[in-house]
Image (cartoon, rainbow over the protein chains, first blue to last red):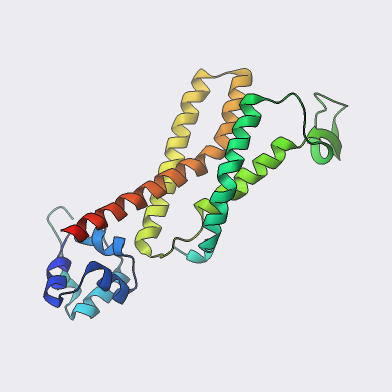
Length: 66
Length: 161
């Protein structure tokens, strides 16, 4: 699974730390999601989607191997 | 992960302060083997075969060296506090690392036990069992904190970029 978190974060001009604080997760979580090392729960995905004003499908994209 | 099952964060520090000296004491008691017994007391026992003392008994009192019992208790309690206290900030990602590390620790511990079962016998095997009582938690603590350290380092790297 790919994600556009880093791009969306750049558009909003917000650091990983700030995003983590806004969403209520650790910086490690945001960092690992961006590095494709961690697949967030549905709840966290929905929170991110709400924050960026994008649908979950726009933020997270399935890959062939998924 | 239900964080209600974890101890408050401040217990982690208390756990570390107890764990380090009790581990050192444990090693001393096991390998240095002091001739003098510090704490020979009459302790309540559920069953004692009386192998080294009087006859066997159920639910009675028996004279034992209590120092090993005390150190064992200290290690179990402090290792539990260190292992299962909340981190400063908790979320699903930390919970995932915790559960993964727990599985990993049980695997590694069992692999070591398997190896030791094959190559240690009699009294030495008893020693292996004694150590094995505590190693699951210790391996877990090492692995969990190592992964936390590694992800923290990744963040520091990200910040510089």
